[in-house]
Length: 296
Image (cartoon, rainbow, N blue to C red; front, side, top):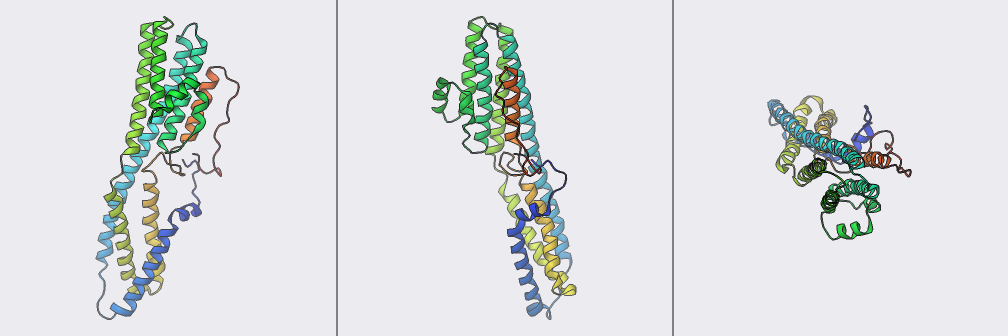
């Protein structure tokens, strides 16, 4: 997630340089075609790029709005995970009587759940969760494909054991079980966002329309600007392309890019908070920003 108010032009060019090269080549080809093939036969009406520009504005606006909605929904889900994690740990610490060791195991297991969920959403292998599981938990979790769901299942089973041992009463059990349900809901919502593909036709048609706009715009202005139309065609196309690309980077909020959610930072925050709550002294450092520009 970007944490700076000013974005360096170099970062934008890194994201768009391939498309920029294609646009420059296209604008050059269009200028040469108009100059040597059609300049003496007919004029291109300015209404064509005008209509196309209006259509592109609608498409880019829709795409970016929908992409931001996905990103913001994911951010709200992880904000809820932070709050529910703190509440779950606090209830374990204060509600369970006479079994401090089980409380620490369950709190540490919850940290493992957070890291396992993060790794799954990013399609990565994150071994951090392993150190917060007992050997028995690790063996059970490794046998299942959905590791974070398996961890919640173990939590529910231990919660049931605490109830049977009269270490929590029925009302406290219900409240803590509801927290596990909320964690399951958050987990499912994250998986829904990750597994739902953004409609390909919208992003594809937007790219096609931008290319058509750049071509027709260059044809029109080359009638008055000559070879400078190559530069102007690229410049106007760059505005549309950079806007569209930066919007589409929000479509998959769990990826590891400068615009994605800072899952590393959020997971580390939960880890630090929960370890401090159970009195641990070996506390990891917070995640530091990359180049003081963004945080993962």
